[in-house]
Image (tube, rainbow, N blue to C red; front, top):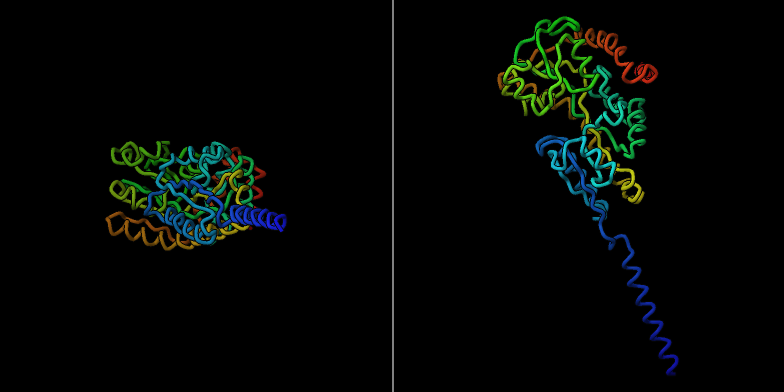
Length: 338
């Protein structure tokens, strides 16, 4: 009887220990995985709002297994710094511009007149397209996973002075504008008829204000309204380039996340990415109206002239970009547009 009693006690202790071990390793009691997520936009921009929407869904549907710690407005550094830190694993995720100094192929989503509508741009910048595949492959080589591309909207030109011949590509505009230090921006602006200068983005406002340059290309009507309305007097919605950022995550951390939780993250990101392209059109209309109400003159481009601009730029600018992106790459993209 004594031996049986001792055996039962030992068995009871063993079973109790097994229960504690089982509880300790269940997903619900595991330590949450916290991911630092960097954003480049201020809280009032819809891109930043999309991150908060993703955070809410992911944390709820993973039951707290994944925590997204958001740092908008360049709190963790500019997009180049953030990209490098995501590669290293010190920052896990981000919604940022893709810095092409790591690979020029990261610029191909910005080819001029890649599409003429938001719906067309969504097709070109979503999984399954040639352009998306090129960007995804480039990021993969750099140790970064592309989750989706976010549509910020078509780019226009904000100016302190009225341009000459605004509706004709190649005709002098009698204005010098700031362009990003990318071949695609410089060549497109110059083929539209502008003189260009490469000024750091942070200095663009003061450069326009002091007359160092007459305007800039590189931002949607929203950015022109929120950041430049006090120094521009004209806005031309050329819609020749499409502003975009990307939801990215480091490959190493992504591989640590369970397949089930990866699906939750991807679903939340896909919803916001799809919404971004739909929202970009309505937002463009809204902020062009706000610019006009503020006193900025909008120079609209009729459909016929827009089609002529697109044809001229594709025929003139794209061949110049072959030396940057390669003829084979551009031919492949052109073929996919048919």
